[in-house]
Length: 178
Picture 1 (tube, rainbow, N blue to C red):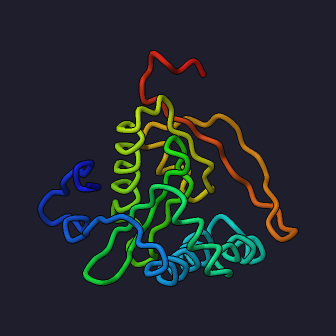
Picture 2 (cartoon, rainbow, N blue to C red):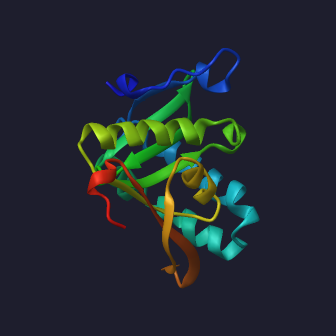
């Protein structure tokens, strides 16, 4: 089903070797928790200090809770062979709740391809606007995909403040007034 929303990658493109599938509750939790932690601790280092990254990465410490969080929405996993290399989630169907790429796969267009798939799912669900609360790291990916900054804020995780950016993209311009 998710492949119905795919934009096929060109020849020689790293994304061409990826398989896209829905999240498998229980089975995928540990691998995606590890991917999440690696993405936060390594890729976000240019935007967040050690304490901020540790507080953010702690969201995957309780594996059962992380699994339940991934299972509650429309979660897509990108994999190469047997290895998960990225995942993203819509929850609800008009909000990008998560978008993470393994460090070895960063800057190869995987986040952009995953975001396009999530947007296609939101459009199929007849969402009029797609929103996201992004990190400083992922904000440019969303902006390149046509999202606009609505507001910025600071959120608290384990007593540590992290900057976050609320972005939106109209999916049906006639219904967007922001």
